Length: 66
Image (cartoon, rainbow, N blue to C red):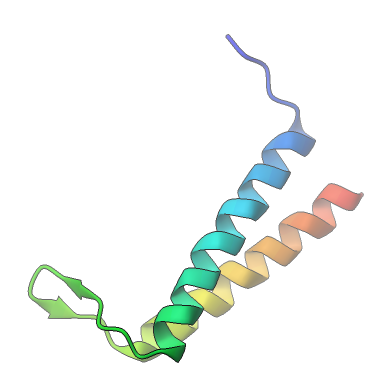
């Protein structure tokens, strides 16, 4: 089995958080519709998720630098 260092894992997580958070921010900025089943996700949800994910990305990068 492949061993993964904690630093590599932290960077991978930060990149994923950054990518997902950026997508939510772009979706909210351009007011694109997001439909899950029959539910239309409100824009404020994407702003909230973008803020949360981008905060997690910054926190992960800070943890990487330690």
